[in-house]
Image (cartoon, helix red, strand yellow):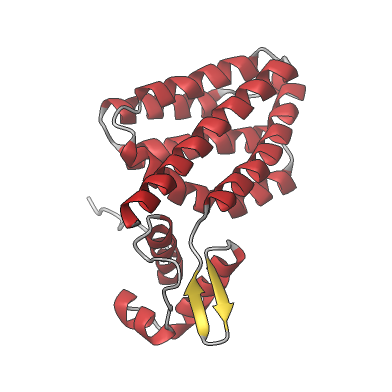
Length: 223
């Protein structure tokens, strides 16, 4: 039997994901000068993908262009608060849309994501947990049926994925977080917008708080 090779993202996308993760983890510190030639050599790509990655990272607010080139800006506590405020607005709208269509909604993607989170928590597998976590939230956008809202979330998802990768490694037991997602899904399923939106706000506030705690710990270690 011939086994098909596993497809991998293009080099430019791999580079973007790697640099984003390094910045979010604090391994590329604020102020670091990102020289195209150095990055191309380090990551084994040409300068074209490097330029594309830097442009995208600037759109995400992780780097900034100064007089002498591109430098790491990093993530601040204000950035985290702003990002979650935007996400709360987007996801709140998505949840409202799901509730409005609940009679015809296929809950399979949400239930499947919760099941995968439980399995990943039991296996102590943070990367698999993060992927299922993001699929859970993405399902609200998909099931809500607003294509432009889903497309807007898709622009922000990679940065949230990088943040989840950080917070999930600091949470020793992911089982309670999986249960939080199951509880949120159950409340949305009742079709009551008020309780559903309150539960979503609390859920996202918890995620935001965990990332802020990581940043605070990083700042203490650096001082």
